[in-house]
Length: 168
Image 1 (cartoon, helix red, strand yellow):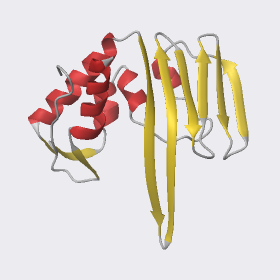
Image 2 (image 1 turned 90 degrees about the vertical axis):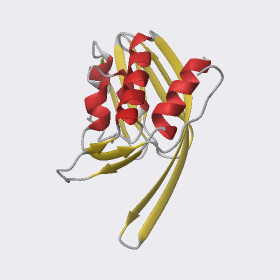
Image 3 (image 1 turned 180 degrees about the vertical axis):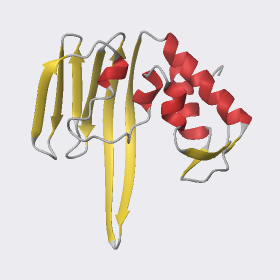
């Protein structure tokens, strides 16, 4: 568990500052790429992962500002079981797959989906019937092409800091 916490902390919060855009000059520090690939390799080896995600999102559109905070429980079991549930926060989508059936609930859109479960985690995380965005990065670590998914559109990444957690 200590290794999981370290991998998530390094991969999601400590390792880089990302800049998205259409700039042709891609500047990714080699250490960022190394740490990200290590985290991806770690998650590829895991059959089951369960964690809590505390998320904060600030949105601005013109003069309008909106802030949203959430606490999510995220569990994955290969090949196709997933549970992503908002424990705190309003209007957030919940996703569940028991391996046979797939369920998604979006209180914001007042929409519910139930259908046969996709056979892979890749297919589950591609479910877009409810218009969910990729605002949570952790599921992307479980996709077959995780590096491409995480770094697609990134034009700059540099090491922002490092921290030792336990033996990691």
